[in-house]
Length: 50
Image 1 (tube, rainbow, N blue to C red):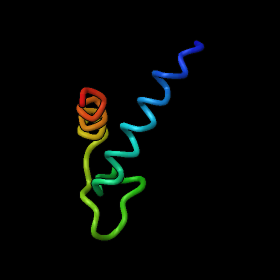
Image 2 (tube, one colour):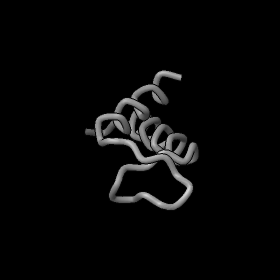
Image 3 (cartoon, rainbow, N blue to C red):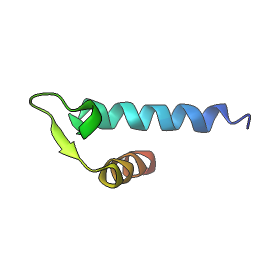
Image 4 (cartoon, rainbow, N blue to C red):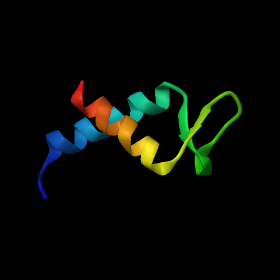
């Protein structure tokens, strides 16, 4: 779709959420906070708005 800036923004948002220790069940690790898929999507969307 030739949207490199938007792709970079999404990648930064995902990284920011993961850096907060938030995880879905499939990538859960000890000491992290487990979210549902919907909650993870909401967290990434919120990170995009910042």
